[in-house]
Length: 221
Ligand SMILES: Nc1ncnc2c1ncn2[C@@H]1O[C@H](COP(=O)(O)OP(=O)(O)OP(=O)(O)O)[C@@H](O)[C@H]1O
Ligand SMILES: [Mg+2]
Image 1 (cartoon, helix red, strand yellow):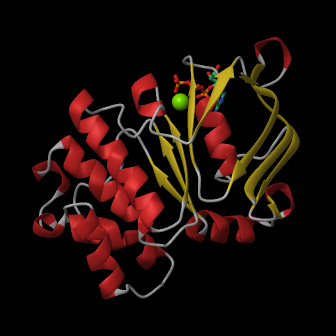
Image 2 (cartoon, helix red, strand yellow; image 1 turned 90 degrees about the vertical axis):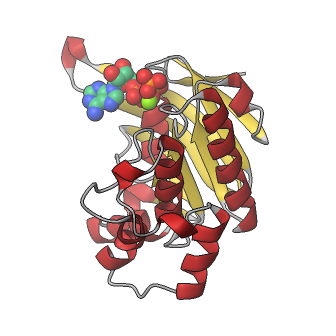
């Protein structure tokens, strides 16, 4: 079963001679529960594609369907709920709030959704990611790898069905990057999630079930 179906997708930024064709006719189906890596040169449209699956941009043309929902047909309110509950984002630079503890950072998406934390689930996630001893620390007290693990825990806490990771190992050294990508893959399998990860590393792309290559806004084989 496909959880993501993208058809004839175009995303252009700007107008006139300065217009950028970030995505220029993308066809893509992603099977539920699979791990897909997206690779391609800088500027090839990887982040744009990931953000469109996450409902952050509207298509210029074409459609993005996630879990049976055509994202262009959702109201602003429905899109907000979609982004909060269906998808979990992990970014290159972690995006943790520096003034909050690791525990507070992980629980933040639930607070914003006025949802109640599940203590057993919280404990399970933080255990899997090796964060149990670091919950009262502030982000700057952790290594880059530790901070990214906290960001992964924050993405998992709302039980999203899709994890969207944009170069999650881009700020880490090779060895730490391998281990963080391995943890992402492991937690996605454990929670039966669909994982879509952008990477510049061919080595990390090999961890995925499938590699999608972008070039000038199109998928190439
Ligand atoms: N919000 C935006 N406004 C204008 N142009 C944009 C915007 N977002 C992306 N672009 C342009 O669209 C093209 C694709 O950008 P995108 O960020 O998707 O590439 P990428 O493959 O993620 O690159 P990188 O590997 O450097 O992160 C680029 O030319 C970029 O400058
Ligand atoms: Mg990018």
